[in-house]
Length: 228
Image (tube, rainbow, N blue to C red; front, side, top):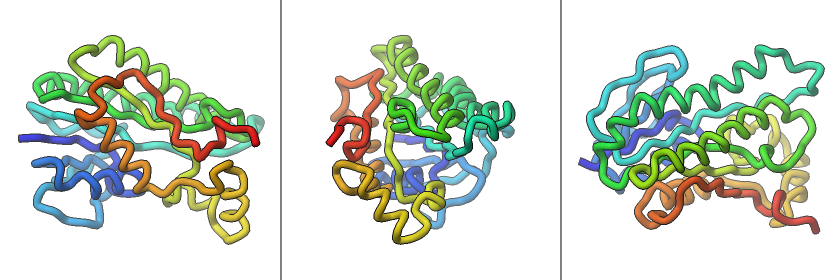
């Protein structure tokens, strides 16, 4: 049985990934604090706080995608040490805990792959992003190190998206003027939709990306790559 484990697949990018891949797997396991809105014979949900709860057991897995993230934007003088700790726990330690838990299952899988999420803010300096950029930069280091450590058995990659139209980013896109400004900030005159990121995720965990590991894929709408 072909099984994909998705952490945080109930909302946003994670839910778009689950939705787009339902027909590609015999079983998609969603692990998050809330159930996804959709129901499907191939979708199994476990209500679980990844940081604090014990994760469910599986003997085999062919893919693992860790989607939880944070957008905690404050000036450095308003960021507490707890802010940094919380962002690091969500973005990095949760991923580490999940990978350690499911590494044996992945090793029993067929051409297994792990996918993590960074952000363009790990490469592009932006005000008020110190905490989230620091934790996501750690995710990028984790991706590269694990890609080397787990080769050739398990591939490890990460996607670094720009602003994506999800609930997590709703404060950045809360009115028409902010939406227009966000479009204008990007050289491609757009920001991301979750379905676009889901398409890239599906590719990276598939055998079509069999030659790619330890890579950070910028989905930046040009904001990191171009200066126009």
